[in-house]
Length: 306
Image (cartoon, rainbow, N blue to C red):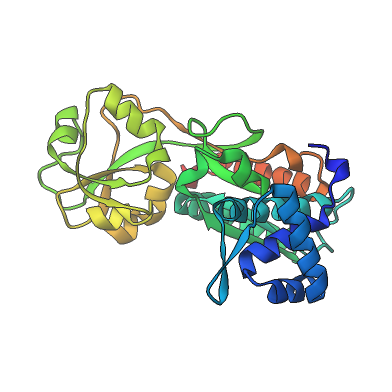
């Protein structure tokens, strides 16, 4: 496909048509008259050799190809917007823009809060938006990163994208502070016999994989889509959970839990900021990455956080 032969305005028209499923409303959305939008739809139908919108009764529905193109056009428009808003220079003290970062609730609590404080102090016009990590991150990393500013994720889950290392963390086990069945030291037998609370996403990865390699199969009693909820699901029960030390220290006082060292040499967590190569030379994004690295360095040097 020769991009030079395409009218990229049709991408905007295509998105509006597929999302609105109405020629008049789509035209109003992008500032085109109804005849002009009808002409765009005709050109798109010829290009794809498909109706895209099929009349059913008194309304339009997407064809099978139209349904496929619905998400792709949204991604393409987001990428084009980021491409054409790239900057050669960036002054954090005067600029106003939003950065979107994909992150777990762990990453937001431990790192995102510190990043937000630094950004507020240095760049008052900048807005940070944290969005929850989707399950599809492993399957479609490049597409997801092309339409956001970055991903806060430990090593061992995604590959093939540029990254900046931020800080390290360790894994600890949590038991209720009044759990008389567990002493001051955990054993592997404890891990096998106690009921577990686990983080339910499959990409929490290396720490859980290590347990399997050691022949330990957790007997899961409760799972949750939030790292921060795990201590509260352990407190006052006979359960056990595996959690990042930095987050455990933040929450242990209010959750009534004890922190215990693993009865094996646990693989450390190396947190990184991952991004799409399209952002590599954008001045604003370069500032974001450099700021994130500085915040990560401050975390590494803070003895109270580790």
